[in-house]
Amino acid sequence: MPERFSAFSFVDRITELEPGKRARGRFWVPQSLTDFPSSLTAEAVGQLAAWVGMAQLEFRKRPVAGLAGEASFLGKVRPGQTLDLAVAIETCDDDAIAYDGSAQVDGAPVLELKRCVGPMLPIEDFDAAHAVREQFELLRGSGAAAGRFPGTPEPDLTVVERASGQWQRAELRVPESASFFRDHFPRRPVFPATLLLDAQIRLALGLAAETANWPAGVRAVPSRVTDVKMRAFILPGQVVEIRSEILSATSEAATAAVTARVAGKPVSTGRVEIAARGAA
Image (cartoon, rainbow, N blue to C red):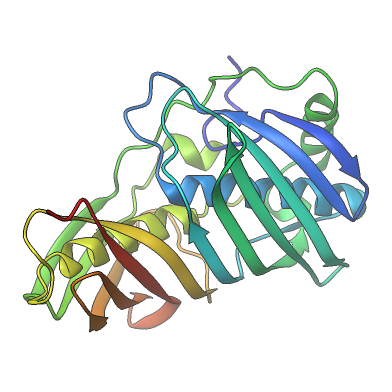
């Protein structure tokens, strides 16, 4: 199994393509995984949009995480299932790509993305253009080997300060080296925004479960993330301060604001909406 396009790549094949306009693709979630977070489903859709954008610009530039207006988590994706991905490109030029997208499993929707924008940067700053082009041709042809994603360990996340059911602050320690940096990215390693989002969601879920209005016997699940904005890259070895604060809570749902800072400077903001499941 080649090292490249395995460690953090979530499109096995591009099954339909209208250049610069729309695409469909697939990703088989390896059976060997113990979990596949909703944030990685969003990553898969975003990567399909990135392939469309890079091809449209003849692999001169590539998009990076920027804005996500809304991500609705509609169902749980389990190991062994196949994600059917779709993207519709609103605009794509040398400055940015704007798109909506979705994912389904066995015809049932599991994710919807709306109002996403990725700034375009020179591809050679992040990867070898010829290698990316060759992978695109493989995805458009026979497809990449299914089941190649080995999974990613949960980041080192430590709660350092909290007020139960109200807010908490945690530190996320980005590893100096990790397998996902082989894909994200070989020439300029960047901690994936979706792994940051997964950590923020987990922090918000734990906080929501402590609210006074949350009944016993339920589990908290993410239902929607809105107004996500990435302001800066997170680099290997950095310590990220994550803060989650409950904005509202009822017996059925909660909303939390999430922020991330590095060395006191903001790197991301967003809101997480949480639903109660399995109430007695």
